[in-house]
Length: 496
Image (cartoon, rainbow, N blue to C red; front, side, top):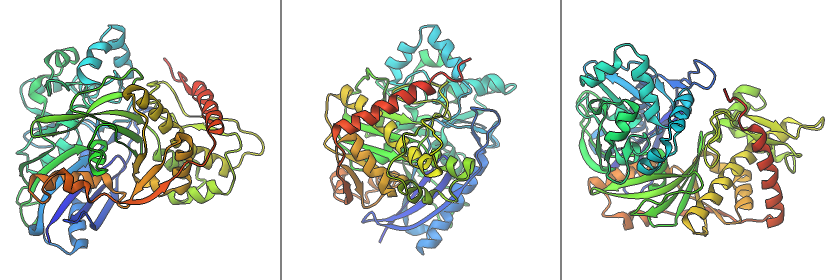
């Protein structure tokens, strides 16, 4: 038996999963790490802690699986996207904490660029909207803020990367400074048509090319791990941003297929083929993956706060002791009692794109209980996802037949049923819910010949449960109308 080690570096934890050739999970290891909030709206991670937890769980997963590094045919990497690191090429030390994708510190810079009429340029070349969510303005902030950083970057002394680049740099002992096209497409610096860094965009944001990683395929043998990390060197052979990896792991390989991942945030992607599809509804056009030098594309809608809202119930309000308790608490009432919670803790993503929106709870009465707030929190995840699907269907001109789902919150049957009810289409949960890590494993396995082709990979996908819509369409429309009124009350709250 041969094995693939998938490294799944997420927003709140680092995970490692060992898969065998049948795509069966043999072992999982996971560690959380610190969330750093220097100011309201700012979110940071310690890059050294990201690396330490990730390499630690990798070793732990191999031990739990009872296998040696020599039995691992390749490592695949998937990662939280847009999170931005800048480090010294010589020492490998970060110059600043990683600026997390949720961070809003560059919202005013984005506003200035929009005021200068530059959003159409960025939109046309990158498929993205001008928002603080993406890496480019975060990197510009680092170069402008850290003394001497810009001149050092121009001299080639510094390296920028998203988390995939940071992990590969460390895994390879500093010999590889690369990123794959799916991660590059999330930076506001990458032209998704030419599949290269764009000089006009670099000049606009003041980013020197010398600081950027080389862009590579999502499935290829890039190199191998440094000899002192594991007991044997292991090929590094697959990379994709977490949501693109989940699309690959869900076997959504033809135009019109879609998946939704329920994690810290919530991300819906629809495969749209070999040509990028523009959006009229503020969705993103992104590279799904690049294989053999050829890109495939997806439409994407991003919800910034999904599972993080449940963590807030646990850590902020203290009404649950663990995230797993939320379903039982929410199910203890028949509905939310008219309560609507908009979890715009770091602004609103697609299709609203309002960095100044803030969290809002409306409809509270003397009869409102913790259970109603818990139920409204779960429902908010489904409402935000329904907003994405409505926009996506309009852009693509396709009515979805089903929505494939993955991520930790898919274990919550109440949430999945409410999602199907709102959408009016079946919600399909696969037998293996760890599709993000699985997608990274598939990409790495393809590169080393562990699986012959994508058709063989698609054959491994199996259904665990189908949630059929049970709510009348009039009732669903009424609930969504109430949600839209709540969103309007959340918008623009923190505007300068």
